[in-house]
Length: 232
Image (cartoon, rainbow, N blue to C red; front, side, top):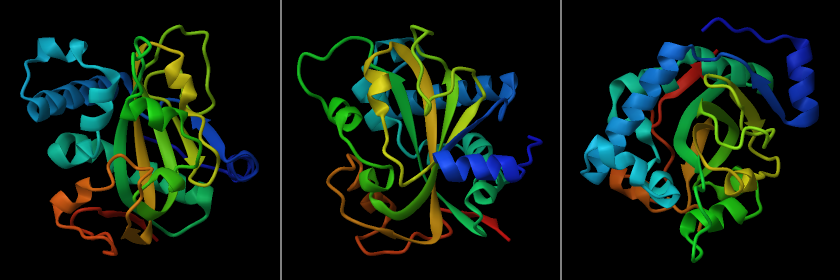
């Protein structure tokens, strides 16, 4: 992973709040990431690999949170220092902490009723406004497999496997792209500040899950559970 940013990247990011980088991960790394995510989901749901394709977008979303905690190889990929350094350079900050990761897929078919995932995708707000940790400072959406149809586009979701879009945590999110496409897999990394607090946020469907890790509302995120990746 050999990337560097320059003033033009930082200026663009400052102006638009979003920027895409090609080939953050090579083909082998993307494949490894896809396999590891599948293995984690199978373990979490106690299913065989051939059942993965039958999961609903809702199940991918609800069980595809903080995947990095369940596998050291995936953790190594997602917590790669250079990724965090790119984000830090774009934001012009010295410290970044791993906040969480989240799996997104396209909604294969319209839901007969409003699901938690539907509500999240349609709900207006920024990444910060939808997160149960504060402050979140930056997101990174990584394309593992592009959704279909391919002509549908979104500035937040790259079309090429291995590419990634960095975006500020305070820009309005338009996740409705995922309600208009089928399949695909995108993994979002949320980077947090050095001093980040766990808060109650009803807009975050995972707002109570961090209690299972030992956190209580008002706690600062710890280095052991949410590592400080970038420190200059």
